[in-house]
Image (cartoon, rainbow, N blue to C red; front, side, top):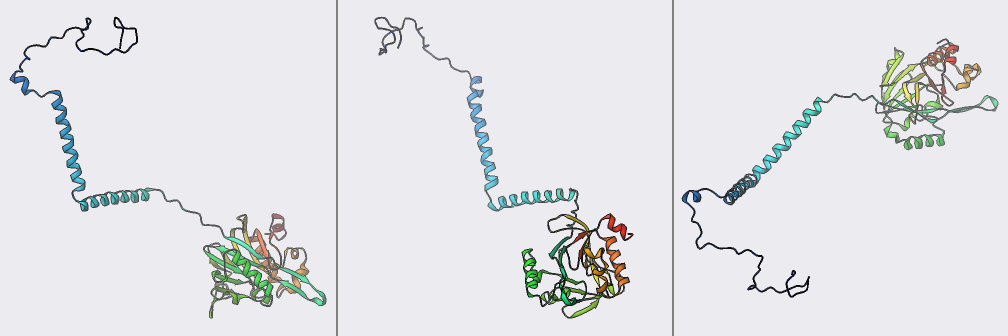
Length: 318
């Protein structure tokens, strides 16, 4: 292809090997090639040096392959040794890390049922006791169990506990604030629990005296203690929970589950709500003041929980 005489431009032309190109220089081939000297033959050429390097690398790779694969047991031992060394290093690093102390979870106070007290004709009352669940330190503590003859109330209590993931065998401790039937009627529903009743503590048929026999306090979990608060009866017990939260995690401060030491919030302003039902008015008045001064929230025996504010504490000279 090119511009040749006698042919139009850009036309393919079959070349004849015998044709001569006037512009091509004639290459002269010598009649005899030079013979290399002995010294030149002994010097390695660049190409032979490259071949030597390749051969050395291949021999080295073959020797490494043989090192790793010649004995499967040695290869397995080598891998296990490396893994063990890495594991030991991880353990050392963990020991060097500063230990962060986890704060214990706060006690949780859940009202299973708000109690009521309704006056009827002929000086009768319809009484439904408050039932409270406390979850603290891995323990489920149930305070009061309701009336045995209130079948619907008992069924409601059990269903509510189950909805919280606490079936009856999962209740560890039962506290009866006092022995009246509207508060302590269903203790038999929790036969596996440790039962506190007044000064007594029992598990099934084995009884003992608690610290409340000769002291004012019994600690039953990290944040929960029992207090002697006589007055409504001679053996009233209140439950004090330190720095608690409610069912949804809202802070409550210190909570007192009072039984009938407080019937409901209204009895603070009306003595006729509690005095006629008191076995010892003077002792109960002192117990009421004790709870008001210690607690930020009170769960009464027959009403919803109520807050204790600064004004209320001032009235009782806390």
